Length: 121
Image 1 (tube, helix red, strand yellow):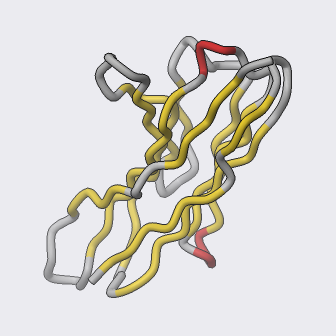
Image 2 (cartoon, rainbow, N blue to C red):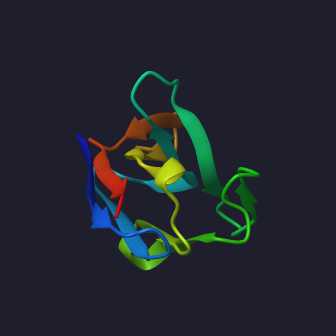
């Protein structure tokens, strides 16, 4: 069993900042790429940012320069620092983690439960 627990969402004014966290726990042998996705009402889920096991990062054009993804491998945790937030950033944010349960197992995708981020004055 693997669990992803997200935290850090909330209500913030335009121009403000938030930091999301996602901690993985349970039966974990290794972790690959970790990432954040978001879904606004009426829209499809979209990629926000990813970070590989070697800490190579990738960002959606809409957040590049404002958001920063990082990871703490000792804590099996991925973070998303969000600065200069805009109303268009309002969405439910989901973390995604590639997990291997044992040396013989294949990687699978685990998803967090989602955390609401609302940017409004």
